[in-house]
Image (cartoon, rainbow, N blue to C red):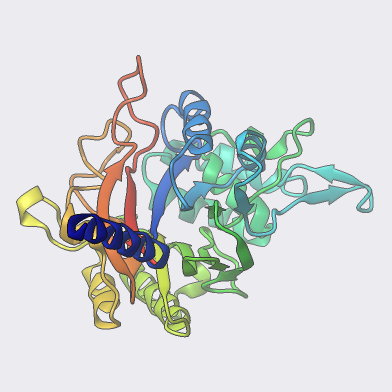
Length: 358
């Protein structure tokens, strides 16, 4: 009788504990759905298929700039998955009566870039400066984002059949939990940029406040944002400013999660991981955030041996689920295998999952 009662009480306690602490899977994945990253056409359907069948509660995606890719993902997702994107940019023509491609008003600028700058394709800084000289920053932010994501495949930005929409910061939030509110914040809201950065802030049932971000990257070139040269002297400073804006917003919440390709990495000698924009990583730590993937796994997420990574000689952990006031249960890397029958993975980044108990 005593044993039966003990077992019954244990079962009841475990049931009660499970009702209090439930595992929530938080993921981040830079999908690299831009034509500047190799094998875009082959990778695209595999990425969409994987996301549609993914095992997650909340997922933050980066580098999903093209509206066609967003639409394809929406079509494949189950109805119980909420998808939030920043407002998609749509160019208009004929007095606003018809949709137009993103660079409808920029033929001369793009022609100049094609004629004068194409030979600089392997030097991003030089290509950017040449494009600016051609008048790139006089065009709409949507056109600039399309050209940045398209690279030498700029005809996509003039496709009058597709009349593409553009997700300017490239971030997308997926949730299988109820999203009570969501909004987009740009780090530099009133500044036209070559690469416009921002984040999605969302209140999600049973999770807390989520900040889905893609912060300034290390392009290993001179600082190329002309409209910010009076503010920052290099990309490391801009990334640190992004990080400070994220933590300032997140600290307004009791249980924040900062998720995304934050483009900051610590040193992890055991796994040959090199620091990148380390001041930003240390800033997150100083504000009480931790990256469980770093402490529990530590393998690179942006890796020099990934065949899609070009002209980069380091291993970094750039992708994070930063937690504060959450119970961490586990962490892992995912989407790190090659696509079946192909010799490359779905992206030049690998995904990160952190499971928390709420």
